[in-house]
Amino acid sequence: MAGMFASASDRIILYSYYYPRSRGIYFDWTFLLLIAGGLVCMAASALMHSYTNRYSKVLSRSGLTGAQAAQLILQRAGVFGVSVQPIGGQLTDHYDPRTKVVSLAEESFNKTSLTGIGVAAHECGHAIQDAEGYAPLRLRSQIVPVVNIGSQLAFPIFLLGLILSMQPLLTVGIALFSLAVLFQLITLPVEIDASRRAMKLLGSTGLLADDEMSGARKVLTAAAMTYVAALLSSLLQLLRLILIARGNSRND
Image 1: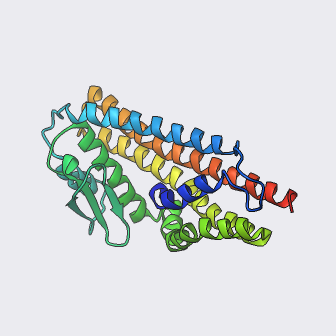
Image 2: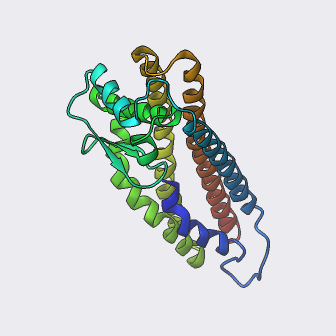
């Protein structure tokens, strides 16, 4: 989700140094909120990459690839009709409830490592959520179209409201961006629950030994922290938009 805001966010950053009247150039202190959010996301991403890289080099004693582990987990969980397929790129692993497909990046699909098996188990956790009708997952899937539209329009409308000094447009822009924040708020428990299920499944199926579980747990915990960081960053951005809108209102 964070990627879809990149270009619009850049426009806000550039515009933040100008006021939509003839007041010249000034430093907008709310820009510091963006910096704080960016630093948090960078730290979480660095931690995740550190653990995924470290444990991708630690081979599982079971000798199973991520794809084989995923198929075994789904079978043991009684989830049928879900396929496991490879997908290009790195850290592109995901589960699509529309197609019932667990997609694993090459590192996870073809190789045996604590990272690959841990990630595969996590995505299977989403498939199990889907099979059980886990409410937060269903809600997240249902609001995706609305969130996509809202995220595309939020910043253009907000910018137009600043340029024209029209408070209603600023409010609409903030409301649309709030949909993206809501999406991330729903996503967080979905991801944490999938990781919880993954660790339980890895233990119950015996895919990983007790001493291997620690590495998989570190990978999944670090991955979860990226969602926490993304939510915090979006909340700071939302706060910034609200502060800018209030400043605009006071200067009308």
